[in-house]
Amino acid sequence: MTHEVLVDLAWDILGDDKDTPVYFSAAQMYLFFNSVARRMVEETNCLQETDDTTTLVAGTFEYSLPSDARRVNEVLLNDEVLRPITRAQIATLDHDWREAVNSTPAVYYLDGTNKKIGLFPPPDATAAAYTLDIYYDAWPVEVDAIGEYHTVPEWASYGLVCGVLEQAYLANTELRNLAASAMYGMLYRHYVSRLKMRSNGRLNRMWRFFGGSEMREIPDGRLPDTIG
Image (cartoon, rainbow, N blue to C red):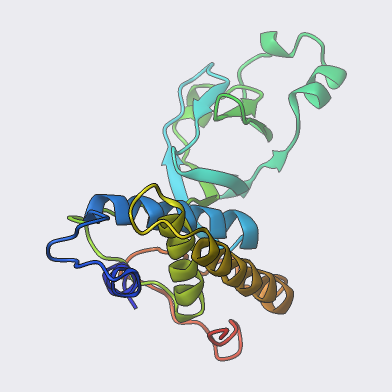
C-alpha cells in the first residue's frame, strides 16, 4: 500500500471528501500521518538503516551527524571498524585528550545533544583523505500531499490508519468524537503491542521502514502478517 491509499482510507472512514475536504485538508492529514509513523517507529524500533559518508578535516575532532539519524550502528574509517567510546572514557585514559597529536582515529564518540560524532585521535592529513562511513537507523521519510508517495509495508498499514483516526477524532472539529478517538487509540496500541511481541526480536535490521520505492525483498516469515 502507499501513503496515498491509506490517507484516502482514513478520509473515507471520517466521512470527509478528499477532493473537497471539509474538515481535514491534505496537509493536515499528512501531519497526522507523519506523527503516527514517527510514533510507531519509536515504539517498535522498525527503522530504516542507511549510511552517510563524511569528509574529514585534519585536526578536527567532531563532525555533524546526518539530520535524520536516530541511532548510530557502526562507523568505518577506510573500511576499518572504529570502536565506540565515550568522552568520559577518553578523558580517563588521557586528561589532555583535546591536545592529542593528529593521527589515524581508532575510536569514535557521540554527542547526542549537539548531534555530533567525534573521532579520537583527530585525523592527520593522511587520515583526512580516508572515507568515514556512518551506518545508522534513520527516522521515517516525511511525506506531504504533493511529495512522492512511499510504499508502506502491509504489516504497518492498518495500525497507521488507526493512529491517524485517533488523532483526527480528537481534533477540534465538528467530527470531534472522544469515544471514537479512544477506540482507535486502543486499536493502535493493541496492534503495536502484538507487533512488538511477535516480531521485535526478529526484524531484519537492514529492512527499510518507509524507505521509498526501492524496498528490499524480505524472506518469507521474517515479518508478521497483517494483524487484524
